[in-house]
Length: 436
Ligand code: GAP
Image (cartoon, rainbow, N blue to C red; front, side, top):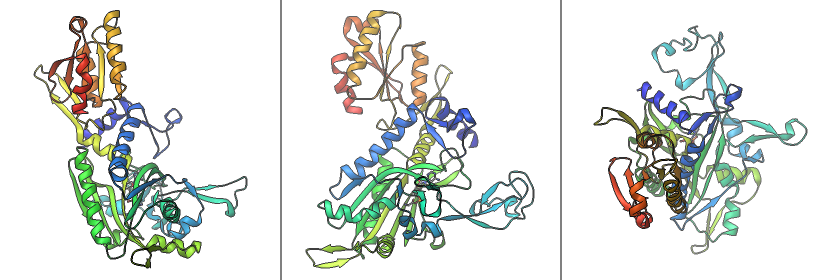
């Protein structure tokens, strides 16, 4: 299984999905850069999420809050005092291990998995928030934090949205953005990093209706994963002692990675923890007044929270296939759902040095790219060009050959079936509209 993971991570680097962060300076642990294909994949994931959670609904609005907020936000939310991991540090090599990760037999005896020495250190706690300072002095008054979750920005804007938008309970506020955690042990490629993107919804409901909406959102989120073609998912109900300090109930959506079942999204019932905490610290009334029933209450919150990079990694693992062809050759193909594939169509002039072919191919390219993200490739033989597009998950390839000049048609090749058919150039947009 690790062999497969190795192949997937190497493909991600080799084909421009993910690069190690600051690579020319030796990298920086827990930080990655997303290359030309990675940025498209992430964009498509975020767009699919936004369409489902915001655009297709009349009860959810969007938000983009600042990453750095008044530190009181994180004092109120309990992150300054409670957002920490317990770790054990090897006295010899100084490598730190998260307590819950010391599961393997040899680690239970507390033998360092890195250098083989026996641990002597004490269990210590470590706050996961990145600290920074604002302004020219670095005293305690200037301390600020990079947000560890995007949710904080939503809670502090609850009243703004209520006062400026025509929303009524139940309604949600959605946000996609960067979050930062100084993870003790970033690992498994882009699975656990120190900088990542979250897609979060805070759905405000009347107390007592929280369980009903919890179930609704859990089902809707599972349905979304099915709609983007992700298989191998399951749910996991967190035990009380596993839950975050704010949670009444949490169900994780897990994906079966080559390194085991792991969380890609958490659905939490945060109750009224956050709004109450912000009322207490800010002194501002964040309750809701129901005009029809003439009653005032502090809403409960249902929170589906997903990580963009974890979903991207799950997808890469899920759609990676190695296939034996009739010719005896092998092909690597990413069977990504077309709406997530970085490029939708690749356009090839059969020969790069035949002016007429290139001219017609350019015309086809310009026409199709008005609608879809298209790749252009005029190098090497057509078989190699197909293989290269299969490897990055491009659903369709279009080849312009000498017949195209006579008959105004092209060869369209399907990534998954590898079947080819001739389509008239004038019909191409209609043809692809059916699939893309
Ligand atoms: N607001 C709730 C919250 O932040 P979480 O379970 O800590 O809950 C939600 O995070 C999601 O964010 C996770 O399911 C995961 O997809 C993503 N995530 C959390 N920590 C991450 C990390 N260090 N690297 C990558 N993604 C992470």
